Length: 303
Image (cartoon, rainbow, N blue to C red; front, side):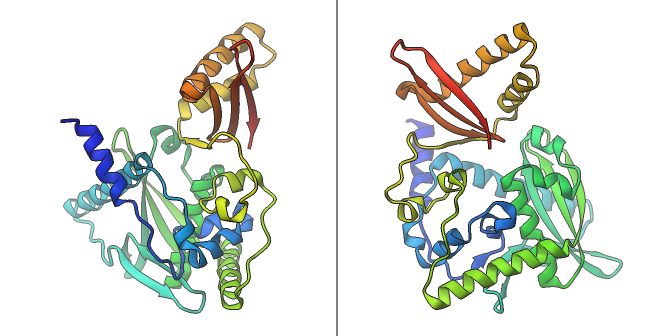
C-alpha cells in the first residue's frame, strides 16, 4: 500500500469548485489595488467561478494544517478557561455583498472582541510582532483586510490576532486598532465589484504581470499571454535569507560567490528535470534555465 499516494489522491478528489455569490472577507485583500490586488479577479470570483484554476493537493495540505492548528488553539484556550463565543459564526453584509466567518469572539470588560487565529512558518512568526509587520508579505496583507472587515461588521475599533508558530506551537497575540483608511479601501473595493456584477461589466486589467501570474483566472483573463514555465510559489524563509545575504554582500567577493553557488544549486534542484524555473519565493522572483552548454543560468529579481 502506498500510503502517501492514497492520501494525496483523496485530497485531489476533495478539491472542487463551488459557486460564489459574495466577496469573501478572507479574499478581499487580493482584490484591493491599495494592497497590490486586482478588482477584476474579485469580479471573476463571482461571475466566472467555474473557470477558476484549482490548487493542487500539496496546497490543500497547507490549508488543512491551518485548520487543524486553529482547532488546537481554540482547544488550548478552552482548557485555560478562556471563553470563546461565536466560533466560526457566519455573517453577510448585504449592502456591500460581503460575507465571511469569524474564528471567534472573546469578552473583554463586557465588550465583544473579534479574534482571528493564524498559524505561521517559524521564520515568518518571528518577523510579525505588530499590525504594521503584516505589510511585509502579500498574503499577510490579506489578513489585515480580513480582520478590518470583521471590525467594521462588529462596529468595533479593536480586534486580536492570535499567531501560532507551526514548528514549536508557541503563541503570541497582536492587538489591532481599526485602520479607517484601510476599512474605507475595503468597502470601496467591495462596492466596485458589486457594481460591475450588477452592470455585467468587468474592470480594467492590472498592468502588474506578477499579480497576473499568481491569479487563478489568468487563463480566461489573458488567454493569449504566455507566462513561460508554470509559476511555483515557495514559502522557504531559509532560502529567501540566502538571497538576502547574497544581495546585501555583493561587494564581498568570496562570501557572495559561495552564497550564489548555494542559491543556484537550490534553484536548480527546484527546477527538476525540466531544467527551467519560474518561482516566487518571498520577495524574490527567480527565473532559471540551462544554456546550450548545460550550465544552469539564474536571474534574481525583487518583486
